[in-house]
Every structure is written in C-alpha cells, then in structure tokens.
Length: 169
Image 1 (cartoon, rainbow, N blue to C red):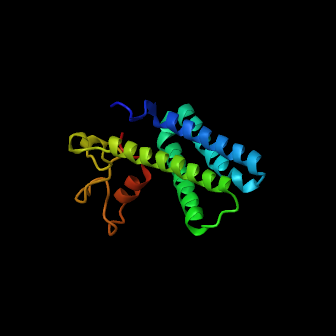
Image 2 (cartoon, rainbow, N blue to C red):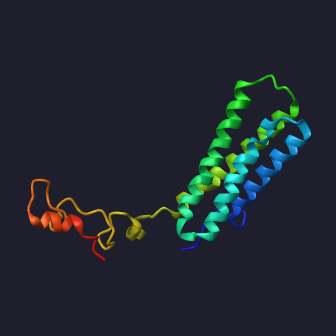
Image 3 (cartoon, rainbow, N blue to C red):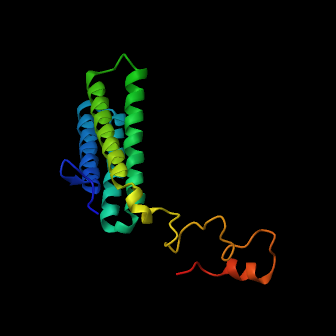
C-alpha cells in the first residue's frame, strides 16, 4: 500500500516542515516583539519536529508519533482560534499576524492528518486490517469462541491454564 502524500510530502515529512515553520514563526515574532508568549508556536513546532524524527527513527511507532503531532496541531489551532476570537483588541498587529499564521499552519496539518487517516482506513476489500479479523492471531475473539476464552463461571484448571498462557501464534 502506498503512503499518503500531501503536496508531494509524506506525513512525517509534512510534520517536520510544519514544525520547522512553527519554530521559525515563534522565534521571528519573539525577536520582533520581545514577548515570551510569542514562542508558543515554537513549542508546538518543537514537539511536531520531534514527532517526525521519532517516526523516522522508529517506523513501527509511526502511529504514536503522528498522533502526538496531530495533538500539537489541534492545540495550535484551538489556542490560536480562541485567542483571536476572545481578544478583539490586540496589543499589536504583529500578535494578530502570528496567531493567524499559527492557525493556518495548525489547520493545514490537521486537515492533512485527517485526510491521511481516511486514506489509510480499511475498506471492505481490506478486512484483514480490522482488529477482529479471525485470521489474525491477535484478533478480538468471536462472542461464541468458548474454546480459548472460557466463561466467567468456569473456575476449573482449563480456565487458569488458558488465562496464563500467551496468545496463539
């Protein structure tokens, strides 16, 4: 299966690019305005960049790292939007510009992440990707599968041995 691409970038690459842009945004506006709060985009950017690096170094943990990145982009989107909506009288136009750019970057990453998730979601042709697929040794058991998963009323030695053994391989 091919990976989802957005503007020619895979999601870890896109996450790194958005993270770098957020770090740059925060540093530039911190230098320009002198306010420490201008570094909020940099905080989200650092976490996104670290998530991208983690995803590249440990591909088997890609889902975990990309979920962390999505949480950062959602937080940036919510924080920026809430600040823009609740504070109509800005102390400076630079703060308004920074919040607007942070919302655009966070929203772009969030939208691409949702599209990536929908792209990778299994359809009826890919049932083996479901958690409950019977051919999968780690599948959730069927409700009538009493051979490997005895009922709660069964206190015999079979229940103890089945519950203490590892899943079938």
